[in-house]
Length: 99
Image (cartoon, rainbow, N blue to C red):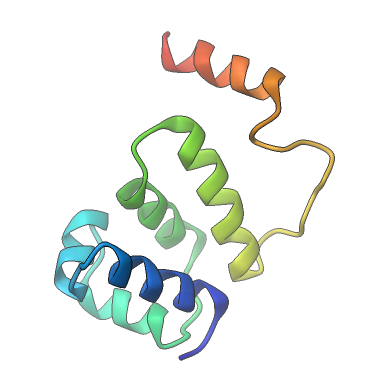
């Protein structure tokens, strides 16, 4: 198995007892794309966003997971200046979820 992102996706599917086809249905991706990511192929940022939407339910979860997966895929570097759990950010997220 290849990348950290592939390992994350494989483990997430195992934890949720999802087949590749079920993960594909949940994310709007093809089962072959899911398989390729697990095998280590490098997905596009758009594909990562579909994974995030398929595996989260709230905006705050999406922010956390997208940041983490983009980091695993090498699209972002770690930035300690703001964390998704920061109270100010939570307040902003709450505002946008309710508008």
